[in-house]
Length: 152
Image (tube, rainbow, N blue to C red; front, side, top):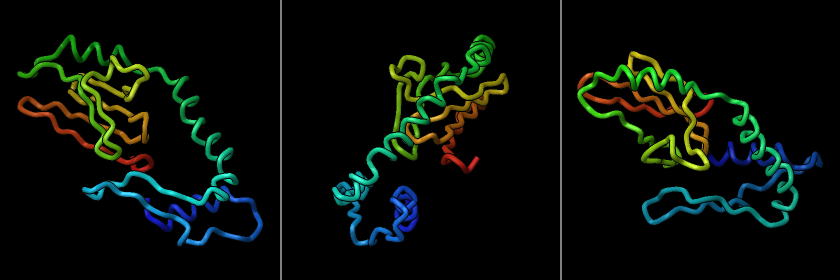
């Protein structure tokens, strides 16, 4: 998330006093390779945002509980599998680096099956960042794409 977007998001949660958070209060942390690790904000600001952010973060989990994965579509694809390579169970989100060797075995689940069809298209939603991972199975290769949430 860009700095301006982060400030706008945080300011939405602040009490409506007319004040906004100064941009120099945010410290971005990166690892040695430049990959973002997190963002530090002043504790006083966290005290104002804590409850609102936690309740917002809890919402996606409850939304996902009611979702029924199309497992029968997946099973139909697997039963008719005629590709020259074995069925692949691994999924990797390129946006947040969430990954698994077998999406069905994770507890709690890292990815939700969103769609599967006999044409070889399989789509997953990353439970960490809500990105969409699409695996297009072709006769000689698998094409994988990762789309940010909201860009579908």
